[in-house]
Picture (cartoon, rainbow, N blue to C red):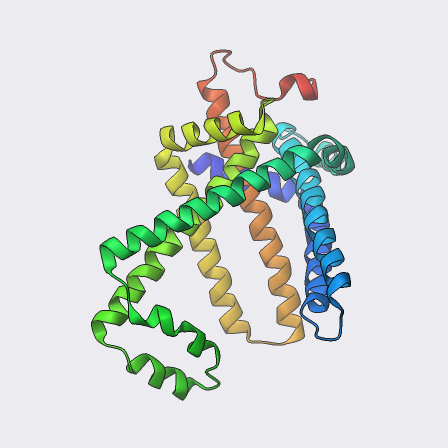
Length: 290
């Protein structure tokens, strides 16, 4: 796994151009949501804008993951700087090719993931209730949204018993773990769907199978990304809130996300290649002509 973590970073370094469409997409979404949350915009334009965001998200995901796949497939540590630069540009130019070929599949995957998330959320709530009980603080969360000062928040939390606060903390921790697993699995699902020429339901089956047969590696990936995520949060606290720090943190967040995608993609690619009966033949070889 140490090699996969290191090589994934090298792939990202060789293809830093990949963060450009992600930055543009995030800027568009942030701008669009300011209109959606505005009280001065009518309902119909909001609905049209929301549908546009959903379609753009599917199109962006299709193209962006497609070029990341080729970033993995074309990686060769022996390449010169010139060869690496040429490959990065060639991979980047495949963005709209990916949109055209993967758009409908991406919409289907998002629909499957929505159903899966709802099911997992339902199971998570049931498990938390059985294991930790129902903390009263859950029903008072709307009041927490109206808290305007730190003193009010402290008074609000002090109004609950220690047992209730402990149960709520267990709910948060357990939910965070499940959320981390689901985030990882979602990327893995997209990795399988991109590398394998199978339908989305069989891709789901293969993603579940890969996860269960590579639990240790999956846990290492999730822990690695948690450490990086914690580092980002620490930086946001240290840097404070100003325009410059916001821009820096957005760029770092895109790099973080792009690395997460490449790490899972490369982990799946390398593990599947190693387990293949065809020896050195790699997934997608027929596509790239390598």
